[in-house]
Length: 528
Image 1 (cartoon, rainbow, N blue to C red):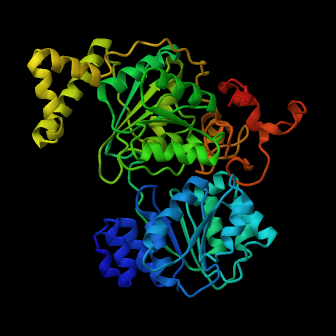
Image 2: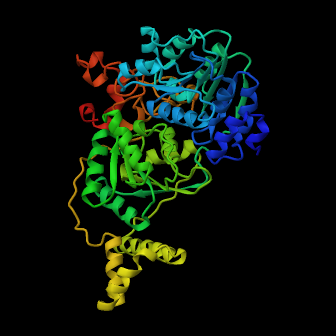
Image 3: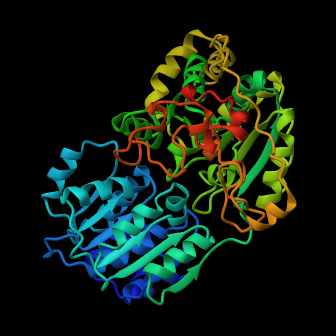
């Protein structure tokens, strides 16, 4: 791998990279940065977590002069979480050069964004819906943009942003450099690239296997009513440093987070109905370790990049294979090992086998540990942590109180009481009852439709066909109401009204994503 000093970057950029702790470039950075520095259009195919943000951010910062008082670069992202993360990374990389960047997204007060735009940022990072809003208000002008980045382009198109993207790009000057990054390259992405990119260089670091090899994957067959106790046993047995638990709906996330808190776990929930301030607070607590279990919906977790996540639990089986891959990809990052557990009810085994077929990865079955094994495992983890502290001699400030306790109490009794306290052995078992979720079943389809990849029952991506439609009859992201299907939720993507707030006028006017095949998700969208 090349070191960053080999790219010919200016000292202010190199200093920022060094202070962030980076020395060698990742594969996508090694391939993309020289092309981007040369000013060529670029298509980069890479998964989240491969360092692609720096792959386009470093050349942008290198190119843009601090004397510019206009918008020079436009970066489009599918979600506000990703927009914020990209803006944060650009801020770190540009800290010594002084390039100003600003994230623009729905859900935040637009007046606040307009005031921030008056500070003349050179780089705008935004979601297509809110960007178009500003463009129409003439609070953002694209006349001087020289660099455009489409980040996670497949996600944006899958969310229904194609027309917005085309409208925005048509207003950017022809003389520009355009970089497109996407995990997959379905036909619609290729058409977008052909229309808006000029003789692009194509670089790819796509792994041979969809599922990350550093992630240990196992499934546990468990009945719906037993899932919560199963989760508690696994958390007790392995005591993860940071864990993300995925639920299918917002209701599930709320109930599960509250139930974990009642049982004494340090947990909180994340979904689309939370305000941006609440989301930021939850993520800050998760990143700094104030909570060690984050319960989230698929949509809320899109774009999350938190280092140190050791475990992912699919409390509810995801609707489609891509969601499964995305979920487990939250762990096992930066060369570290991770663990992914998936709860599967007996009626969902066929759907699990479908996920295995598409991801080309056999997921082994794991037996749920007994209560005795969970208690023993928890005690073992605590004992290992105590011995680690002893080995590192990180306890001097506690010696005085320890000596006082030993003068009056038996050492074995003291240590046993300490281990009980650390393992939460004094906690009472609180009765918990979650609202059951309907199982996900594999949809039966005709072979000729599978091979063509045509839209069926509201559409989705059929991985076995043309690569263009998601399998599962249009139920996006397993039931979260922030569907990624041709509309944007005000809470998340811009200023469009939520679909749930629109008047219902009978089955004839409902979109196919709300009827038909989607009965597997209870059909009660008011609770999502």
